[in-house]
Length: 326
Image (cartoon, rainbow, N blue to C red; front, side):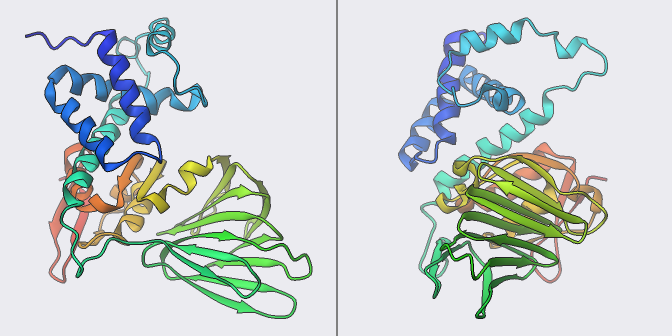
């Protein structure tokens, strides 16, 4: 039997890629995808190809996710073959990321039946503040409020955490979120703050916020995010961000695009039963694009050595050590 993939299989695979990325995807959808994925080797090849295609060019497709794959591939056929062009970036990093998504999705399907009262699934906790604002907290995240007559100050504590703030409008009492030396100031808006390892990402879903760091300040409007590395002399960068991707963690999905593995693991550790300690700076600098399901963190962790040049070793005090492969 030939393993050659035809356009019809690519069309089907593309529909699955879009469906699994939809925040409305259910466990039944995942189960149906898994049956299709395992039924034929050509299905696996097609899905991996379309996942790779998404990561390489999905940002250019825009909102037209229903576009014909045949049309998309026709445009791709006119591009030079990267495998024959010296110096051109190959597709294998995106393919590696797609394999992680596949493994994590399978793990999510299986681990959903292993939840017990002693190990409950992480839930989003919503807190109403005295001024009418609300805070949605992710797993193992802590925010302390320090209100005064002229300011509403909230401090995100710890080295890792995530929260979504819906701010009640009050120009006389600015709303400020402090994360280390970064301050996020808003009057009436909604935004998400993720603190992971040495990285802080602020994504705005409504209104405008002003982000201040020791190296300067910037205004960020809805539909954008700003990322800042706490240490070093890095300059914050602003990039587009959809509300669906920003708030995917509330549906149990952690989504990343070119994020340092150290930041991803800092997030994953808040959901995992076996925390990872990065003992090699080079391993933490590897860039990751893909989705991690919070109910399948162990499956994702186990997959790391299969797609990245890293190794995992048990630590004497518990958890795992991550370092580059020797």
